[in-house]
Length: 481
Image (cartoon, rainbow, N blue to C red; front, top):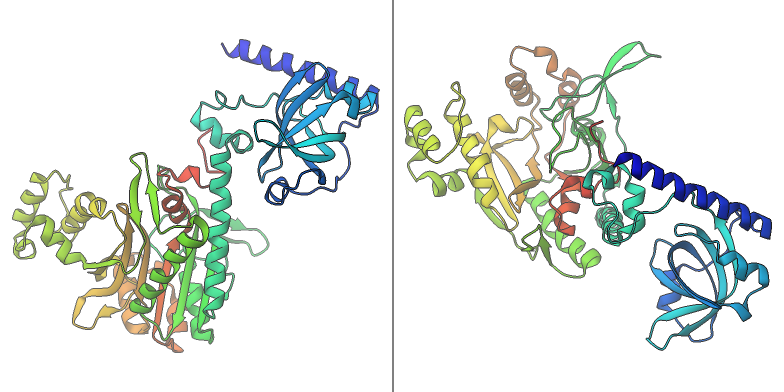
């Protein structure tokens, strides 16, 4: 079968090269010059009968009928029908159009009219070849059935799959709206290093590299948090960054080693101010980009409603709802038995804290379908957050969960350098070098009370476009060989 496919592909290519040579003999340039044109979406939006227009795009369909032909072109904004008639074209143009292949780029000039079936159409009076395609494009309805091929050759997916292209247009619009709202609220966009001397701001395995000019080993950042907080120390009061993080970990339906995040920090804020920001941001994105506050998500078209306010519930209360009101009074042995009876697989050395979190991770989080702020988490899981005023074992944070997945954590940030050192040392364990001493030194110069959040852009786009696979919202995801 592969040999048949290759032979067929080669035959198509050879025929296209032959067509290109014939077009050149007629006087066409195979790879032409710039072409002044209107975008097809604008032509459609301002359609007026008999209006003179110039347009360009990739040829998607052709239907030839002797002395007349219909075709459609797509310029990335929309598709539009063209009508070619022999007596309206030069002899060269009419003969040349017979040699145009699907996938070629052409420029046209002509008048707008509406066909008997009501289709807006350009009646072409001039056309030129802009770029010859030597490879056969995928057949619109049957091509690219191999899902992995869609990711490896994204250009083909975008060429024939308008839903895919629209999804990435929405991604761009979502990021633009995030920037617009934050700018309106006085936040300043900044850039912090992607190559760092040590990984900080999260617990994750980094990618390692070497800086030849400095002759030092470095890592690609796993989070920008510690640098952004240094800016708060330095006097910035509202900052944000949208950029890449890199974590040398697994690939699955919701994880990619290279991913995009938004991090926001506001001096004199706290968890509540970050919660208010989320409840302002999500509805705005829905209305501006989607035109509604509800989203149909996943294969089952589950309806997610982003109308605020969103539910707020504590971590402990969720565990008690699932496992019983006496859960936190049970012995280690009894919690283990109860968790395993509920179907949670446990490792032998897990303590009460870890068993509880495994219950939350495996049983509880996936049940949180509508937007939910899960608050007051154990301090061991969030070493960069400040403790709750009424319980030092809990931290003043939220995890914002939608459709069973964490979308965004938000904190009242730790600004006590001594408490921060203890938390980072506890996290580092025997590896004291993992404590970022320069960050502690920065905190000793004084950081005001601060609220912060980190929003996964890829997962946000997944939610708002209704897809459950992260590779569908990343243009060029990492793939195995």
